Image 1 (cartoon, protein in one colour):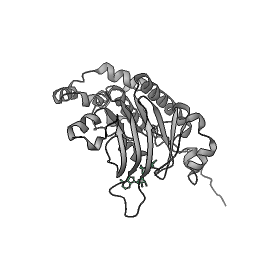
Image 2 (cartoon, rainbow, N blue to C red):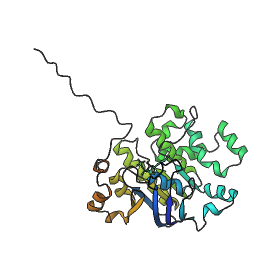
Image 3 (tube, protein in one colour):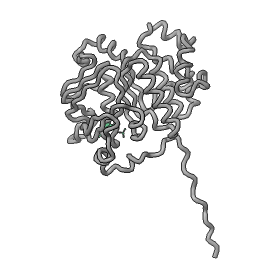
Image 4 (tube, protein in one colour):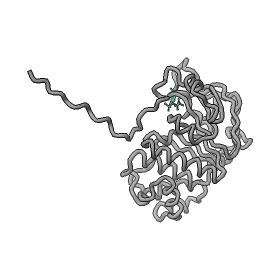
Amino acid sequence: MKISLADLTARHPTARRGAPDALRRLTLAIDSGEQLAVIGPSGAGKTTLLEVLACARPPAAGEFKLNDQAPWRLARRALQRLRGQLILVPQVPPLPPRQRVVTAVLAGRLPQWSLWRALRSLAYPVDIPAADEALEAFELSDKLFERVDRLSGGERQRVGLARALVSPAQLWLVDEPLSALDPARAQRAVSALVQQARARGVTLVATLHQVDVALAHFPRILGLRDGQLMFDLPASEVTPDKLAQLYAAHEHELRGAPPADEPPAPAPPVVMQCR
Ligand SMILES: Nc1ncnc2c1ncn2[C@@H]1O[C@H](COP(=O)(O)OP(=O)(O)OP(=O)(O)O)[C@@H](O)[C@H]1O
């Protein structure tokens, strides 16, 4: 799916008065089948950008087009159809507790199913091999029939990614897919995600805090800061200088915070003071 933004501004309705816009005059063109990572410090506007691209948040100003159509000028049903051609994978996928992993993954097919087929799949999952294959790509096929409320945060994130693989979407919008994964698994998950998108000719836009992972796996990198595009470059041209400017005063984020699931560092040994 092709994307174009021209002078796009976005704002949260709940933002306090006088707060700067979350996205400011963004101009961007993404071709069908490209894979991009969006990096930048916390609060840069990465999630807001994905929400706009997912047609979940109307821009406050400027132009936004998907496949040369302006989504917010379409009639409701046409907008729904367009939304069915994309998938937004949030950082914490909202998975109903007690649901089986297989059902949660196959929910990615909902846009192409009739109501009857969707209801039937809740009781009798209709394409178990497809769910299994998608989970396999993220090293999770042993959890096919597990309940989602028995999964770790990192496993839930990978269920969200597997859902994209079974979906008919031509645009994958993935928000922070690695925040709960250990470094080695994070590398493998992103590698699988990019490979799968490339093999299917799907457009992939992913936000990432792990800059090293973004540079290693994505051909094109957007640097976002304070809602503005600082750079839009091939990964090979993102120099340490550019990163230092992007993360100025946020250098700790560039070095990378530990993932949420990582066990806390062991407490220092207690030293007994004997008089
Ligand atoms: N629900 C909200 N209401 C008001 N302001 C918001 C809301 N969500 C985000 N913002 C503001 O919009 C700006 C962009 O936030 P956004 O979540 O898009 O940044 P981000 O780059 O994804 O950050 P992070 O890396 O911490 O997830 C920030 O200034 C933030 O405070």
